[in-house]
Length: 354
Image (cartoon, rainbow, N blue to C red; front, side, top):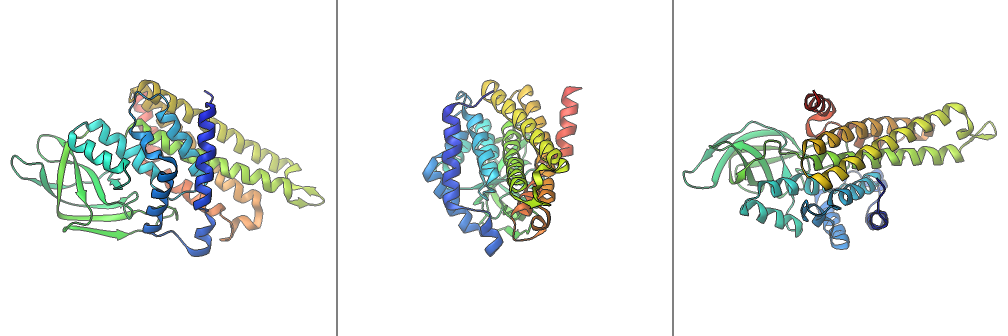
């Protein structure tokens, strides 16, 4: 399961484009990014690379899922605050699976860079629907919405009569209140959203599992990038830091720690690429979902353990605000709670295999 020369080139170009526009140290100097700055970063990177189209090119393109995971790993390494995960891996595939004309129009708006749409993973809603119309009014509360401060619209699944429907709500309309959340991950911009008879429209019947395999695979790739950064930072420091006249990397305890970090990264990366290739070749099958869940579980474990271990290898500087290690640790700890959380992934995987 080797990447092609074009995919290695994609990783290089994506890394260079991101590095020219963003560095995690910006947070250390001036605090978490504001929503408008992230929107401009998102639009600028898409102008450079046209990457949003990866997720909208259709399952017939065998490189789509793999390319997306290549991009997610590279940007996960760099802690980019852009909504790649929510847009390219969650919302666009979900709208494509719905298949209605209305859903396709919203997807095209996202691909064109004109809209950012958040997805509500869970929630209970009271829905009123006008007879013979797609218009609805929705009431309910969402404690946390990924990229909620960036989004123009909100997608949610609610029973609007006739079964679960995918409902689109414009977040600047009457009846919608957004509240800024300060999360553990300083690179994400979540929000709490309250709906009080907020106007919306039905886009079509919701899939039984709105979060597809692509969402878990892309999250896994992002976390592999985080774990990979931690490994590289640990090895670099261990080779340069001298103690008792020797590089600290020559001490057995440090060697063993770095070796464990390497095994964790390579295991998670292999599982993530297997998931991406399975999605690219088979689409949203049971096998693809199982592979993606296992990849996400492995990558989350690797990211949390590696970002903790690099702090130990770094020593005193690793525990300070001035070093970006804590930003990566925050990203890893927060991300493993996405999409039902690591225990939820494990439970679903066990259920599907039993």
